[in-house]
Image 1 (cartoon, rainbow, N blue to C red):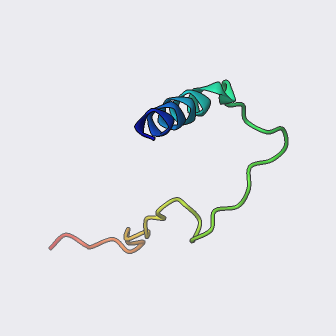
Image 2: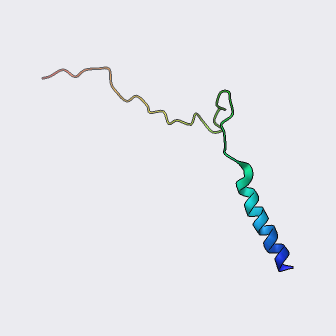
Image 3: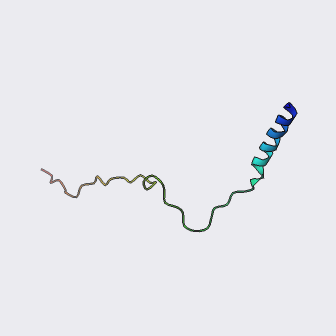
Length: 53
């Protein structure tokens, strides 16, 4: 019984590496699921100038 279990484990691990190299599908990239994926920084600059005293 243990020989069968060992054989199944070996075959299962060997099958994991038989998928081949991964390739990106053609076409545009899908939209991210949560938000835009990029953190947008807020513009905190001021447009007014201080006058020197």
